[in-house]
Length: 276
Ligand SMILES: NC(=O)c1ccc[n+]([C@@H]2O[C@H](COP(=O)([O-])OP(=O)(O)OC[C@H]3O[C@@H](n4cnc5c(N)ncnc54)[C@H](OP(=O)(O)O)[C@@H]3O)[C@@H](O)[C@H]2O)c1
Image (cartoon, rainbow, N blue to C red; front, side, top):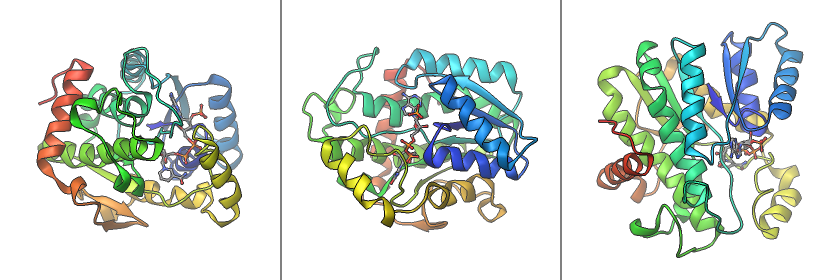
Protein backbone atom coordinates (compact mmCIF):
# COMPACT_ATOMS: atom_id res chain seq x y z
CA UNK A 1 0.00 0.00 0.00
CA UNK A 2 1.55 3.25 -1.13
CA UNK A 3 0.44 6.83 -0.55
CA UNK A 4 1.25 9.41 -3.22
CA UNK A 5 1.66 6.71 -5.87
CA UNK A 6 0.57 9.03 -8.69
CA UNK A 7 3.98 10.55 -9.40
CA UNK A 8 7.69 10.68 -8.65
CA UNK A 9 9.18 8.34 -6.08
CA UNK A 10 5.80 6.81 -5.16
CA UNK A 11 4.97 5.83 -8.74
CA UNK A 12 8.40 4.25 -9.24
CA UNK A 13 8.13 2.38 -5.94
CA UNK A 14 4.73 1.06 -7.00
CA UNK A 15 6.06 0.01 -10.40
CA UNK A 16 9.02 -1.89 -8.91
CA UNK A 17 6.91 -3.67 -6.28
CA UNK A 18 4.36 -4.64 -8.95
CA UNK A 19 7.21 -6.07 -11.03
CA UNK A 20 8.11 -8.20 -7.99
CA UNK A 21 4.55 -9.55 -7.99
CA UNK A 22 2.96 -7.35 -5.32
CA UNK A 23 -0.73 -6.52 -5.46
CA UNK A 24 -0.89 -2.73 -5.10
CA UNK A 25 -3.22 -0.45 -3.25
CA UNK A 26 -2.43 3.08 -4.41
CA UNK A 27 -3.74 5.94 -2.29
CA UNK A 28 -4.03 9.03 -4.52
CA UNK A 29 -6.01 12.27 -4.41
CA UNK A 30 -6.92 12.42 -8.10
CA UNK A 31 -8.65 9.62 -9.99
CA UNK A 32 -7.31 10.69 -13.43
CA UNK A 33 -3.72 10.85 -12.12
CA UNK A 34 -4.19 7.53 -10.34
CA UNK A 35 -5.57 5.86 -13.47
CA UNK A 36 -2.73 7.32 -15.55
CA UNK A 37 -0.25 5.87 -13.00
CA UNK A 38 -1.80 2.40 -13.29
CA UNK A 39 -1.75 2.61 -17.11
CA UNK A 40 1.90 3.64 -16.88
CA UNK A 41 2.76 0.69 -14.60
CA UNK A 42 0.80 -1.65 -16.87
CA UNK A 43 3.21 -0.90 -19.73
CA UNK A 44 5.98 -2.59 -17.72
CA UNK A 45 3.83 -5.04 -15.74
CA UNK A 46 0.83 -5.98 -17.94
CA UNK A 47 -0.82 -8.22 -15.34
CA UNK A 48 -0.46 -5.78 -12.42
CA UNK A 49 -3.19 -6.02 -9.77
CA UNK A 50 -3.84 -2.50 -8.51
CA UNK A 51 -6.65 -0.79 -6.61
CA UNK A 52 -7.00 2.96 -6.36
CA UNK A 53 -8.16 4.44 -3.09
CA UNK A 54 -9.01 8.13 -3.40
CA UNK A 55 -8.14 10.39 -0.47
CA UNK A 56 -6.98 13.94 0.01
CA UNK A 57 -4.52 13.27 2.80
CA UNK A 58 -4.76 16.85 4.11
CA UNK A 59 -8.07 15.77 5.62
CA UNK A 60 -7.99 13.39 8.57
CA UNK A 61 -11.58 12.29 7.79
CA UNK A 62 -10.43 11.25 4.31
CA UNK A 63 -7.45 9.40 5.79
CA UNK A 64 -9.83 7.46 8.03
CA UNK A 65 -12.18 6.73 5.10
CA UNK A 66 -9.20 5.48 3.07
CA UNK A 67 -8.33 3.17 5.97
CA UNK A 68 -11.91 1.85 6.08
CA UNK A 69 -11.93 1.34 2.30
CA UNK A 70 -8.63 -0.61 2.46
CA UNK A 71 -10.03 -2.77 5.27
CA UNK A 72 -13.00 -3.54 2.99
CA UNK A 73 -10.84 -4.66 0.06
CA UNK A 74 -7.85 -6.29 1.84
CA UNK A 75 -7.50 -8.72 4.68
CA UNK A 76 -3.78 -8.00 5.17
CA UNK A 77 -1.18 -5.34 4.39
CA UNK A 78 2.37 -6.65 3.98
CA UNK A 79 3.95 -3.26 3.40
CA UNK A 80 2.71 0.28 4.02
CA UNK A 81 4.80 2.91 2.25
CA UNK A 82 4.12 6.40 3.65
CA UNK A 83 5.39 8.35 0.69
CA UNK A 84 3.03 11.27 0.00
CA UNK A 85 4.58 14.57 0.98
CA UNK A 86 5.08 18.14 -0.15
CA UNK A 87 6.80 21.38 0.80
CA UNK A 88 4.59 24.51 1.02
CA UNK A 89 5.67 28.06 0.45
CA UNK A 90 3.21 29.64 2.89
CA UNK A 91 1.16 28.75 5.91
CA UNK A 92 -2.31 27.41 5.33
CA UNK A 93 -4.56 25.42 7.63
CA UNK A 94 -6.40 22.24 6.66
CA UNK A 95 -10.12 21.60 7.25
CA UNK A 96 -9.07 20.17 10.63
CA UNK A 97 -7.20 23.35 11.57
CA UNK A 98 -3.68 21.87 11.24
CA UNK A 99 -0.84 23.40 9.28
CA UNK A 100 -0.97 21.49 5.99
CA UNK A 101 2.69 20.36 5.74
CA UNK A 102 2.49 18.76 9.18
CA UNK A 103 -0.95 17.30 8.41
CA UNK A 104 0.04 15.69 5.11
CA UNK A 105 3.65 14.72 5.76
CA UNK A 106 3.25 13.44 9.32
CA UNK A 107 -0.29 13.17 10.71
CA UNK A 108 -1.69 11.38 7.64
CA UNK A 109 1.16 8.85 7.84
CA UNK A 110 0.54 8.27 11.55
CA UNK A 111 -3.24 7.93 11.11
CA UNK A 112 -3.19 5.64 8.07
CA UNK A 113 -0.79 3.33 9.91
CA UNK A 114 -3.17 3.39 12.88
CA UNK A 115 -6.11 2.57 10.60
CA UNK A 116 -4.20 -0.36 9.09
CA UNK A 117 -2.63 -1.66 12.31
CA UNK A 118 -4.70 -4.86 12.37
CA UNK A 119 -4.05 -5.58 8.68
CA UNK A 120 -0.32 -5.06 9.23
CA UNK A 121 -0.41 -7.39 12.24
CA UNK A 122 -2.33 -9.95 10.16
CA UNK A 123 0.48 -9.99 7.59
CA UNK A 124 3.36 -10.17 10.11
CA UNK A 125 6.24 -10.04 9.56
CA UNK A 126 5.19 -6.85 7.82
CA UNK A 127 6.74 -3.45 7.23
CA UNK A 128 6.06 0.27 7.46
CA UNK A 129 8.37 2.41 5.31
CA UNK A 130 8.21 6.19 5.72
CA UNK A 131 9.86 8.55 3.25
CA UNK A 132 11.57 11.24 5.31
CA UNK A 133 14.34 13.56 4.12
CA UNK A 134 17.78 14.84 5.09
CA UNK A 135 15.80 18.10 5.31
CA UNK A 136 14.84 16.95 8.84
CA UNK A 137 18.12 18.56 9.89
CA UNK A 138 16.64 22.02 9.17
CA UNK A 139 13.61 21.49 11.44
CA UNK A 140 12.73 24.45 13.64
CA UNK A 141 9.58 24.62 15.75
CA UNK A 142 8.24 24.90 19.28
CA UNK A 143 6.16 21.99 20.55
CA UNK A 144 3.14 24.16 21.36
CA UNK A 145 3.22 25.42 17.75
CA UNK A 146 3.96 22.21 15.79
CA UNK A 147 0.39 21.47 14.70
CA UNK A 148 -0.48 24.99 13.54
CA UNK A 149 2.85 26.73 12.85
CA UNK A 150 1.46 30.11 13.83
CA UNK A 151 5.06 31.15 14.37
CA UNK A 152 5.94 30.26 10.76
CA UNK A 153 9.71 29.89 10.44
CA UNK A 154 9.89 29.44 6.69
CA UNK A 155 9.16 26.58 4.32
CA UNK A 156 12.45 24.74 4.89
CA UNK A 157 12.05 24.78 8.69
CA UNK A 158 8.41 23.68 8.52
CA UNK A 159 9.08 20.95 5.94
CA UNK A 160 12.09 19.88 8.03
CA UNK A 161 9.89 19.60 11.12
CA UNK A 162 7.47 17.29 9.30
CA UNK A 163 10.36 15.12 8.10
CA UNK A 164 11.82 15.00 11.62
CA UNK A 165 8.38 13.76 12.70
CA UNK A 166 8.68 10.98 10.07
CA UNK A 167 11.87 9.72 11.74
CA UNK A 168 10.39 9.99 15.24
CA UNK A 169 7.31 8.12 13.99
CA UNK A 170 9.46 5.30 12.56
CA UNK A 171 11.46 5.08 15.77
CA UNK A 172 8.47 5.06 18.11
CA UNK A 173 6.23 2.82 15.98
CA UNK A 174 9.14 0.36 15.73
CA UNK A 175 9.31 0.24 19.53
CA UNK A 176 5.57 -0.13 19.98
CA UNK A 177 5.01 -2.68 17.19
CA UNK A 178 8.02 -4.89 17.85
CA UNK A 179 6.00 -7.61 19.56
CA UNK A 180 3.54 -7.62 16.64
CA UNK A 181 6.46 -8.26 14.27
CA UNK A 182 5.74 -5.11 12.28
CA UNK A 183 8.97 -3.27 11.43
CA UNK A 184 9.11 0.47 10.79
CA UNK A 185 11.92 2.42 9.16
CA UNK A 186 12.40 5.87 7.65
CA UNK A 187 14.60 6.94 4.75
CA UNK A 188 16.07 9.81 2.78
CA UNK A 189 15.63 9.14 -0.96
CA UNK A 190 18.35 11.53 -2.17
CA UNK A 191 17.77 14.72 -4.17
CA UNK A 192 15.31 13.59 -6.81
CA UNK A 193 14.03 15.32 -9.95
CA UNK A 194 10.33 14.65 -9.35
CA UNK A 195 7.45 17.14 -9.02
CA UNK A 196 8.89 17.98 -5.61
CA UNK A 197 9.36 21.74 -5.17
CA UNK A 198 6.39 22.66 -7.39
CA UNK A 199 4.38 23.68 -4.33
CA UNK A 200 7.33 25.51 -2.76
CA UNK A 201 8.48 29.12 -3.15
CA UNK A 202 9.83 30.51 -6.42
CA UNK A 203 13.30 29.66 -5.12
CA UNK A 204 12.36 25.98 -4.76
CA UNK A 205 10.47 25.91 -8.06
CA UNK A 206 13.37 27.44 -9.99
CA UNK A 207 16.03 25.59 -8.00
CA UNK A 208 14.53 22.16 -8.55
CA UNK A 209 13.90 22.92 -12.24
CA UNK A 210 17.43 24.19 -12.90
CA UNK A 211 19.05 21.41 -10.89
CA UNK A 212 17.00 18.66 -12.57
CA UNK A 213 19.80 17.39 -14.86
CA UNK A 214 21.98 16.82 -11.79
CA UNK A 215 19.35 15.16 -9.61
CA UNK A 216 18.52 11.48 -9.26
CA UNK A 217 15.74 10.21 -11.52
CA UNK A 218 12.55 9.19 -9.64
CA UNK A 219 13.47 5.60 -10.49
CA UNK A 220 16.85 6.00 -8.76
CA UNK A 221 15.25 7.93 -5.91
CA UNK A 222 12.81 5.08 -5.24
CA UNK A 223 15.69 2.65 -4.61
CA UNK A 224 15.78 2.84 -0.81
CA UNK A 225 11.96 2.72 -0.52
CA UNK A 226 11.91 -0.44 -2.65
CA UNK A 227 14.80 -1.93 -0.67
CA UNK A 228 13.12 -1.34 2.69
CA UNK A 229 9.76 -2.56 1.38
CA UNK A 230 10.99 -5.80 -0.15
CA UNK A 231 14.58 -6.83 0.52
CA UNK A 232 15.11 -9.94 2.66
CA UNK A 233 18.27 -8.19 3.95
CA UNK A 234 16.14 -5.91 6.15
CA UNK A 235 13.82 -8.59 7.51
CA UNK A 236 13.46 -7.77 11.23
CA UNK A 237 15.42 -4.50 10.99
CA UNK A 238 13.40 -1.75 12.66
CA UNK A 239 13.51 1.81 13.98
CA UNK A 240 16.30 2.86 11.63
CA UNK A 241 16.92 5.69 9.17
CA UNK A 242 18.29 4.61 5.80
CA UNK A 243 20.16 6.43 3.03
CA UNK A 244 21.22 4.61 -0.16
CA UNK A 245 20.11 1.22 1.22
CA UNK A 246 22.28 1.60 4.33
CA UNK A 247 21.44 2.53 7.92
CA UNK A 248 22.53 6.13 8.53
CA UNK A 249 22.68 8.41 11.52
CA UNK A 250 19.98 11.11 11.49
CA UNK A 251 20.35 14.34 13.47
CA UNK A 252 20.86 14.13 17.23
CA UNK A 253 17.36 15.44 17.77
CA UNK A 254 15.91 12.70 15.54
CA UNK A 255 17.51 10.13 17.87
CA UNK A 256 15.79 11.53 20.95
CA UNK A 257 13.39 8.85 22.20
CA UNK A 258 11.63 11.21 24.62
CA UNK A 259 10.71 13.60 21.81
CA UNK A 260 9.57 10.63 19.66
CA UNK A 261 7.23 9.57 22.48
CA UNK A 262 6.01 13.12 22.88
CA UNK A 263 5.15 13.27 19.17
CA UNK A 264 3.26 9.97 19.44
CA UNK A 265 1.13 11.31 22.29
CA UNK A 266 0.49 14.57 20.47
CA UNK A 267 -0.47 12.70 17.28
CA UNK A 268 -2.89 10.49 19.22
CA UNK A 269 -4.50 13.58 20.74
CA UNK A 270 -4.73 15.49 17.45
CA UNK A 271 -6.18 12.48 15.60
CA UNK A 272 -8.50 11.55 18.47
CA UNK A 273 -7.22 7.98 18.71
CA UNK A 274 -5.47 5.81 21.28
CA UNK A 275 -2.69 3.60 19.95
CA UNK A 276 -0.89 2.06 22.91
N1 LIG B 1 12.28 14.81 -4.49
C1 LIG B 1 13.21 14.93 -3.54
O1 LIG B 1 14.34 15.42 -3.77
C2 LIG B 1 12.92 14.45 -2.14
C3 LIG B 1 13.96 14.51 -1.19
C4 LIG B 1 13.70 14.08 0.11
C5 LIG B 1 12.46 13.57 0.42
N2 LIG B 1 11.46 13.53 -0.51
C6 LIG B 1 10.14 12.98 -0.12
O2 LIG B 1 9.75 12.00 -1.06
C7 LIG B 1 8.33 11.85 -1.02
C8 LIG B 1 7.80 11.77 -2.45
O3 LIG B 1 8.06 12.99 -3.09
P1 LIG B 1 8.41 13.12 -4.65
O4 LIG B 1 9.78 13.65 -4.74
O5 LIG B 1 8.07 11.87 -5.38
O6 LIG B 1 7.42 14.32 -5.05
P2 LIG B 1 6.14 14.37 -5.99
O7 LIG B 1 6.49 13.90 -7.37
O8 LIG B 1 5.63 15.76 -5.82
O9 LIG B 1 5.13 13.32 -5.35
C9 LIG B 1 4.35 13.63 -4.23
C10 LIG B 1 3.19 12.67 -4.17
O10 LIG B 1 2.38 13.00 -3.02
C11 LIG B 1 1.03 13.14 -3.47
N3 LIG B 1 0.27 14.09 -2.66
C12 LIG B 1 0.56 15.39 -2.42
N4 LIG B 1 -0.40 15.96 -1.69
C13 LIG B 1 -1.32 15.00 -1.45
C14 LIG B 1 -2.55 14.98 -0.76
N5 LIG B 1 -3.04 16.08 -0.16
N6 LIG B 1 -3.25 13.83 -0.71
C15 LIG B 1 -2.79 12.73 -1.34
N7 LIG B 1 -1.63 12.67 -2.01
C16 LIG B 1 -0.90 13.81 -2.07
C17 LIG B 1 1.17 13.67 -4.89
O11 LIG B 1 -0.06 13.52 -5.56
P3 LIG B 1 -0.42 14.39 -6.89
O12 LIG B 1 0.14 13.62 -8.05
O13 LIG B 1 -1.91 14.41 -6.85
O14 LIG B 1 0.20 15.73 -6.71
C18 LIG B 1 2.29 12.79 -5.40
O15 LIG B 1 1.81 11.52 -5.75
C19 LIG B 1 7.80 13.04 -0.21
O16 LIG B 1 7.46 12.59 1.08
C20 LIG B 1 8.99 13.99 -0.13
O17 LIG B 1 8.97 14.77 1.05
C21 LIG B 1 11.66 13.95 -1.80
